[in-house]
Image 1 (cartoon, rainbow, N blue to C red):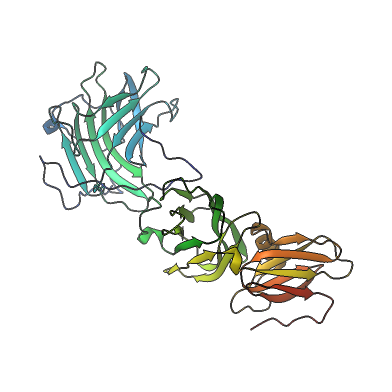
Image 2 (image 1 turned 180 degrees about the vertical axis):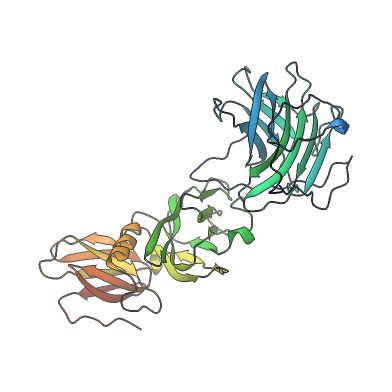
Amino acid sequence: MPRLTTGLFVGLTFTLISGCRDEPRPASPDLTVVADEPPSLPSKPLHELDPARHTIPTGPVSGTVAGEDFTAEAIIDGDYLMFRAATPGHSSSERKVWLELRGPGQTVENRKLIVRPETVPGPEVPRIFIEAPTLPRPEFYSHGYAMTLELGQRKGNKLPGRIYLCFPDEKSTVLAGTFEANYPRLPTDPPGIDDVPFINGSVTLRNVDPRHTLRVGYLGVVGAELFVLGSGDLEMDPTAPPNRSIQVMYDKPRVTSLIAGDGHSIPHRYEHSRLTPGRYLVFAMVPDGGPMAWKWVTIKSTTTTTVDFTLDPLQTGGLEVGAPLEALGKVHLVPLDEQPTAGLLNPTISYAIALHLRLEQDIVARKALFKNLAPGKYEVRAGGQIRYVEVVAGKTVELDFDKKPTPLMK
């Protein structure tokens, strides 16, 4: 069975070796769909085991799989190009055809593969799995089928392609047509032009329990809006292999990726891509009272910037707040920009940031204590009043709201 990549999100991309021995590698197959020439309606392709006779239809990929008609959508999933049922009445989990394309040193884009039934198994012959409810178990082919496969250039997370695929089974399984496969980038691959603007960097942890959760994220202030969904968590385990990753895409079009290091010499890595221009507070933290680091960054349409973080509880500070008399509820903190100005953040945004970063504490006997704060300047809100304070590493700073207010720091 092919391995499925799951999680909060998945980022997927591919590499595949140069062309088949039988055909020279084309410079770049022209797979552009012409706007004024709509694709033909799906029709059942002929079952043809001679690639020399393959005439690929211009319509969507369709055919017969396990004895039933099949119209497919294409997806790049992990190491596989997968065709799954897209016709009404068929669940996407019922009928699938998987082509294992990725291997060491291989690329996917700008490719043409010709496979004949007599071609021996090898790196230029994709392994194929077929799943269907009428099959007692998935069918596996390492060779023995006929295929013409052309793959173009990835653009906008789509990979155009054409395929003609036939199997010598009793039910004459065949798929043929033109497709645009959903093809997002793997978190471990470098960003491309489609990912700009982006912020990326490393996260180094020191003096932290080796079994912990690492969270990275952003809060973007764009006009009057606040995007608070750009975060992702990864459970760290010293026995797990490096390069485990997650990818969060629920704040589309923005994407957050987090790749685990080895906990020693290889730091963790993160990326926030496809950002909307604005002002972003990017952060890394160990949730539930662990250390945090943050930085405000201005994002423009072409910004590509690196922000590296170090999380070390021995390099954090504390804040003890004396709340205003008769104040109830909580004290809220918000990390301040390096050059804050009055009215930078409205109350709604300030409270949302404090809540998202867990920078709030209950007022108990007029006191609220914060620990493991990253050094820097903070806005402090309590009882409808605002103060400003600077936290330094290795010390607990005291702030009393009933004393003379501190001016906004330059």
